[in-house]
Every structure is written in structure tokens, then in C-alpha cells.
Amino acid sequence: MGEDANLQPTQVIAKIFGISTRRVEQLKTEGIIKGQGKPTKYDLLPTIQAYIRYLSDKANGREKRQTLAELEEAKLRAEVNLKEAKASAAQMELKELQGKMHRAEDVEAITTDHVLYFRSMLMAMPGKLAVDLANLQTAAETSERVKQECCFILESLADYKYDPEEYKKRVMERQGWEGHEED
Image (cartoon, rainbow, N blue to C red; front, side, top):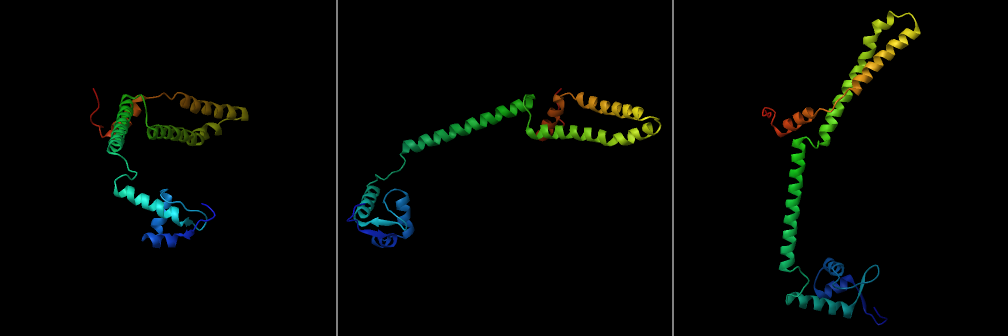
């Protein structure tokens, strides 16, 4: 905007165009008219010319809008994306049903069950050892008995084996197929 610019505030432009100040700001945001500074001021002549050009293009159907082909392409792209997402979901569900993939919630639940079992063994240890330890005479004997019980619990933990049937059961329950086991 040059030195001879006739800078006008948003309110004056709105009054000249017969629109709201909010609409003037929208036109600026859309790049139809240009303003400068804070608060925004507009060079009167270029602003009026830009607005007339915009209205003329709009009246003659030349305003920026998506063509029918672009809209059709966007629709087809959206349909392809939707179908790909559905296919991906179906693949994941199939892998889950085949036992090749497990949901995080199932892994968490089974791991939690396993940890709670381990915890219950640890919590039962004092009661299980109380009578045995009372009958022992030396600290070395007591230590050896506690060590034996700890090794037993740790071996139980180490003996854990992945059981695909446990996961299959959870999938069947979630799908509502509990009574429909495969033969």
C-alpha cells in the first residue's frame, strides 16, 4: 500500500459494502481483500476494486469452488479410505480369531491374573512357613527353608506357558460365542 493510500478502518469498509464488520474480517481471511496493521485498516480503492471483482466472479459463476470432478474424486477417495479401513479391521479381527494377534485388553487381563496368582502365593508364604520355621533350630535351617519356598514360587512363575486356548476363550466370550465352541 503506497503513501497516497486512503486507509480506512473495518467499520467504514463494512458501511460502504453494506455488510457486517465480521464479514469484512472473513473477506480478509479468505484473501479477497487485504488489510494492514492493528487494528486492521484497508486501502479504500484497492479494497473496493477487489470486492467488486469478487462479487462479479461470484455472479458469473467464476468464484473459487470445487468442480464437480473434484467433488466426485474426493467422494471416491473417501469411499476407498473407508473400504481400506474396513478391510484392515476385518484382517485384524481374523488374526485375532486365528490366535495370531491378541487385543491389549486380553493380554493385560491375563497378565494381571498371572500377577495376582503370584501375589497370592507370596502372601500365603508366611502362613505356610510359620509352623515349619517354628520347629527349626538354627538360622541357617530357617534361611534354607525360606529359600526353598522362594525357589518353589519362582519356579511356578517360570513354568508359565503361553496358552492360546486362554486367549481363544476370551475372544469367544467377547464375541458372545461362549456356547459355540468349535469341535
